[in-house]
Image (cartoon, rainbow, N blue to C red):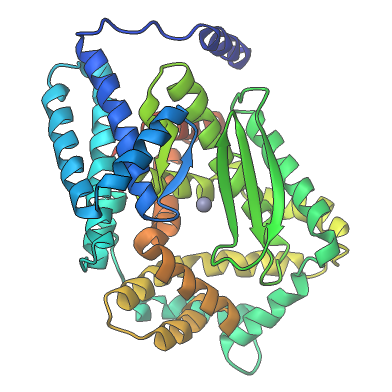
Length: 433
Ligand SMILES: [Zn+2]
């Protein structure tokens, strides 16, 4: 009942756009700085493919970004970032508490942009500096030997001869979705993720996504948010897709993950409040820790405890034509392997800081992520392309989990999760680990 009332109020609010502030007010000054911020981010995006993850704001700002980029190199853009940050700093005293969240958010993104520009100019930045400046966190990196007890535990689940990664890989290959069944399996998985999310979070009725299968990527799935409450979700089929990935990707890329987050940001921040700065999403920014962390944790939120396995064996296994006899053991194995997530970061840091070679990174990834050489290669390619971005998955998930699970009741957990993905949230706003 409460939820329906809330949804009604939100729709009423959406129908009338916020009145523009008087031209000389601090709010008008902030709105104007926010538009300059968007144009500047778009200009940086002209210098690096993939820097802008999504933009659905005014087309004239896109045009302005192109013009700025045409006359400024990355170092000059760095000075523009500094100048804008100083301008916003001078406003932050006067704009008042309700808007402090906006200036804080823009400043965090400008700090990330400054760092990314230094990297674009060829400057070497250490893994930890990069992590702190781009994503707002410096992860604790454990030595790989700290993960040996996890390997021993996994070893007991898949006993036999040969390297552990090989046993784990061939066991998991029994759960590959046949290519011709991919679409029905993914459609059913995403529909379930969506309906579980809609029970707790009201989304605008026009929201929609389309789904495509692609090849030749270093990622396994991607959400391209298009604006107007629409996403294009792509699933990479370079490597065989195992059945547990359907719900994972459905939640992560769709509901309550990236698609839901982007829809809520567009609805509540950009349209209802007129906060233009949220219409641009720079990939290398603290927003990504929140986005990836909530998208990963969203799987457990939507399918708590045994519910994922129950749904998979009841609906997805039959759709894929797979036997369910070993489904529980498969689930147990994946569960045990979750504790290896941190090893990925240690390997990434060692590779990016030049302490190990590509070949060593591939072999360590095989050993500590328990994957085939082809999968390890894809992981290492991803690390080389996106660098410290990899921390957003495991660490982001741990941080969002810690924060949300401080609330014991499922309803309160969803409420808190909804806040995290629909309000300006920085990593430092989450309960510390
Ligand atoms: Zn993601």
